[in-house]
Image 1 (cartoon, rainbow, N blue to C red):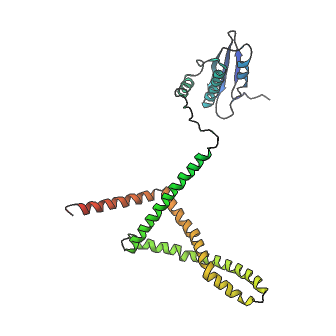
Image 2: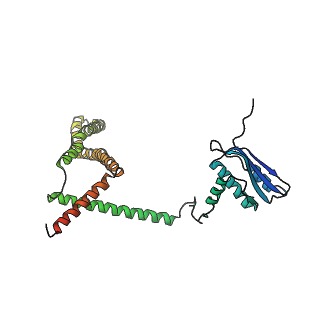
Image 3: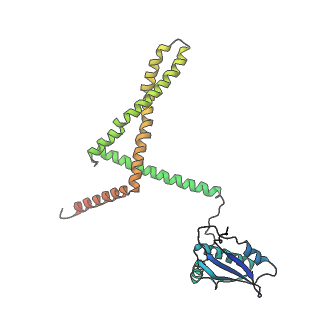
Length: 271
């Protein structure tokens, strides 16, 4: 059985002038892993030390960025060992890419270290985030208060059909889930209350216990929780979708243009 030719054929030779010749041949593609740099490193550290490294790419058929990565690593090793490297034997396109990669030196401190930020920095970031969140919350409360005042004065502009739809979604359509959860919670109250009242022979008051607890206390609490979880989540999802599709930006722009046109008509002498 014949052995297949390796994907990245690399050979390292030493000539009479103490120069290393790295011969590249075959097809260099990203279909497989890069060859090991161990032969090149071993020859660079061998005695006598090589003074120069050259490339021979006459047998190279095709290449991509895999060859660029290999040559860049070899150049880094030569730089650390103090060996001169000659890129003249490489393809012209590869030489241009290497020159472009090394044209702008890396800025010192550009790479973010993997270490953890100091405690003072983390506390400062958390404080800034909390302050910005507080400002956004105050702005939301202010807008909501202004909208309620406009509604109370009869100056709010909205579509009655949309308001009726929202009332239906938050009210009638939420009734089945509220009824189911209230029934389950009432059953739990009845079971726990019956066990405790049985000790005193007062099982007859289980119905009163469940009715009073559900109507006065748990009914309002469960309705509020379910409304906030079901209806609030639906509104949040709808607003998130509108934000992604830029509908909120369009509404804001439309409102701004409407206000500007109204002010222009009101301030115009011909109005």
